[in-house]
Image (cartoon, rainbow, N blue to C red; front, side, top):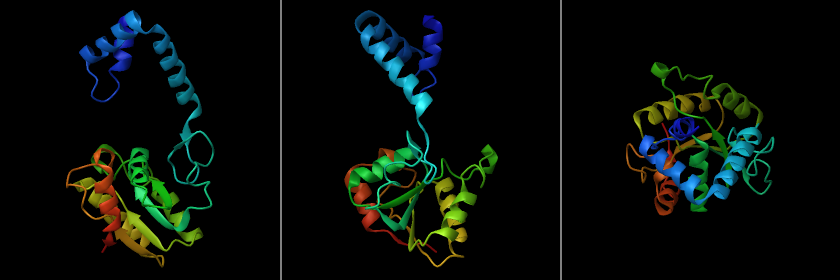
Length: 194
């Protein structure tokens, strides 16, 4: 039982066997109630959280809170790689538009292409909705830049301004790990993407 629990914890990024062992012994020796609460919460999340039918972020409802909020600016669409990127941007408090979550970046070598990122869905969204600005907020990595370039080529067929977040985020960095002020500066300093 303990061995299988160790293997289960090790699926988390950054958690090796020794860290998993510390978690297990802590829960079994000092906080069984907390362990049961963790198991219950994790089971509930795995069963109830799915992807928003509009923006593809994680949500318990068919449409997430942001997509369902009529006070958000429907004319701005910020394209991010992961739901964690939305969380990071929302903490800045500066962006009031909507999102589209790719779920990664283009990487043919890893088998991640247009279909896996939902770019067909994005194309349909752009043809149906009146979007004035697309903000490309993919990570400042080689893959993020290639993905942003590909999306800009899709968006050029529509009458839409294409901007890229400013590089207040360091090259090779990821939104999820940036501080709030850096994200706010990057969004404020975005420029046209060509």
